[in-house]
Image (cartoon, rainbow, N blue to C red; front, side, top):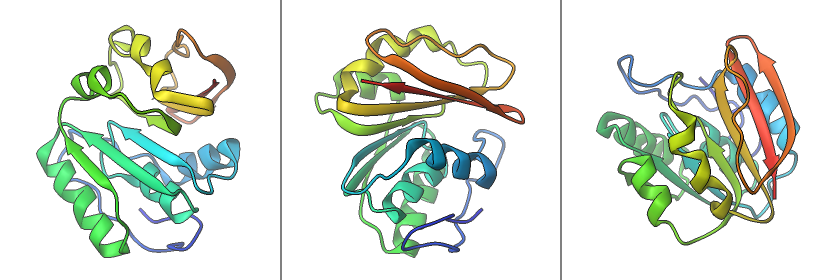
Length: 172
């Protein structure tokens, strides 16, 4: 895996070992950021961060800050190693995502959410809108075989399939 664009373009990033995480492919990440548009000075929240690829891409493209939330300890170590390698600063919360979103009080310009395929979206989606700031955006990655999730309080912008992945964007 590599960073697609921005100040760290072309740099390779590590993925956690094992089958517990499913890193977003370069192709899906590139298409996601084509849909997202500029992220200059954005505050980013990366939920189910895995390798951190999506949040790292946002930082490389000019985001002001990023917070990564991931429950798997090996994945958290990988995110920290990627941040060190790329010389980027960010916060990494190694805790259950549902617990993190229910206790989070901040809002973000860009929320990236990539739960495991087959995850029960209804457990999480009621809490996502309050994390998205005014004029903010939620990018929700799910299985291409699933219908796009509904997120109360946010407006559906678009939903597109890329192979086995679906990207659904919601606006505040």
